[in-house]
Length: 434
Image 1: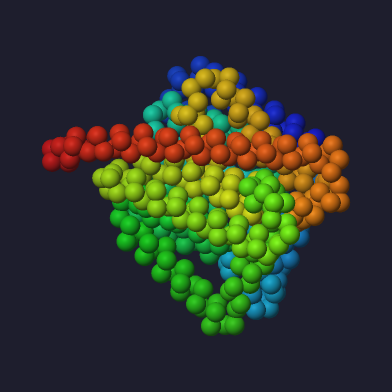
Image 2: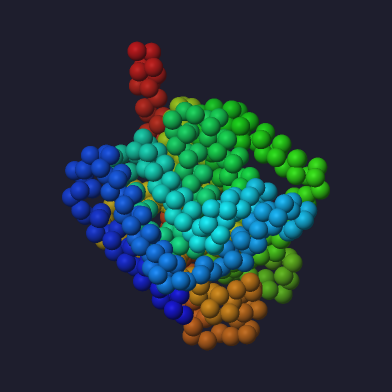
């Protein structure tokens, strides 16, 4: 319970800091280099301070995935064992070797937390540079402030999760696409797929849709990936193990979880229906994004990446039966940009921001604490349906509503941005001739 209280306090305090900074005069008057330095400090000082207090002074140990999964596979790699063949692995083939490198530098799970803090800083810098090119100056700065003061992002760094690696790779790919370096953007995604997990593929259709040179991006992302996985397969690796293992898992805070009691009589049918609905929803989202992008001149397609990535992330969080809130870290910056562009009123902005981060931070901990983890809702409700569980389900429903609201804002923003990109196309062509 203390961990839950701690997460609430951290998320609330970070949110209040972000709300205060949105009104601060420095947000508007600082030069760009000084602003970047300041917002980076806003992110890093609390992270390093809490890391020192918890892990150096307090001698606490990391929990969750780092000791249970990350460190064992990293040590197996150090022992010259082959992933998938000599030991089971739920992540990508190079993940154990990244972990092995971290443990070689500092033989402690805390090295993963430090690395995650660094990855968050990389994510912030890349996204701010991209947003400064895509969005107006004020929105870019406000989005950077909200990302830097996101309590959920801060807590995931302290836990050392590899979700921060995926977020950094995604931000780096977007920056390269915005700057016209499509091949390099594809290579970054290859590295992310090779070193993290298959969930990276969720964003590949979006990046391809909005890439100015789609074939180059796809070739640089796909060909090295095929070569790497083929090399492991030739050496006897069971490459489908992660998919088989992950397919059995579920999480709360999504529509399949909340709707499952309606189909509880046939669990297999429910799983198949939910998997099919998720694929259909994500496929329809990608098709709709493609239809928006096809009307936009190729050089202007990356302008739609912020809203496109946010929408894909939010649809996934809504329809996937395994969508832990930690996954929101992937596109937290785009979601904050959508929030800022979709809600003009300051009080509504900060209220949503603070509440959203608290819900993201504590929801999985409550699920585990109350005994609902990895249980379908119908089975859990048969075991207990007291006030605590009802309050948890109310929080779950609020989080799902928040996802849906942000998704609606993202759709509205995409329509607006695509119209602006089309209208500006003649002037872009004139500029090119000049």
